[in-house]
Length: 238
Image (tube, rainbow, N blue to C red; front, side):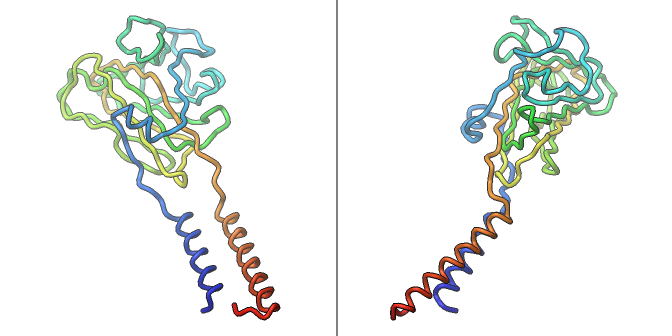
């Protein structure tokens, strides 16, 4: 194999690896570390919306009702409201938050976030703060996620937490694993009340598709071939 062929082979191999190599999702319970990893992101704290506060909300909520941030759907909840109360313990920023109520003995409840940015954007980072998860209960409880088939655990609590304890949960993925929706499952059905605030997400950068990369590689092959012909035509040794 000559030098040009070796260069092209290495290039194609590198492009293939860059497309196929997938990084393992990273989960966070520290917001500062999450923000550093997420980079440029959007934070939505339910401060602006097109809804009547303290009334029961239907599922799903459209992004247009949540300041064009995301669609939000739920299952197995008795109550689903946006609360305006600056003195409430559930508030992380501003004065509003999402209030939910689960029932003892009911199946795990879920929240599904999708249609990010109101344009179904792919995202590489997602996080939020939940208040009152696993308060004063003794059974182990978890928060798990499913983001386009990427699954795992965001938080595991062996025993109960004090009332109004705040937990941050988040994850980041490689650009090749960017997702359009994420479903969170909570088996905290004994605490009863949960508050959610400060949803954070980072949109994925547009990356070349495998087909685009292949065309780019073929273009380089042609360029190298022309350079070799030109050098040979001038009596130079390739």
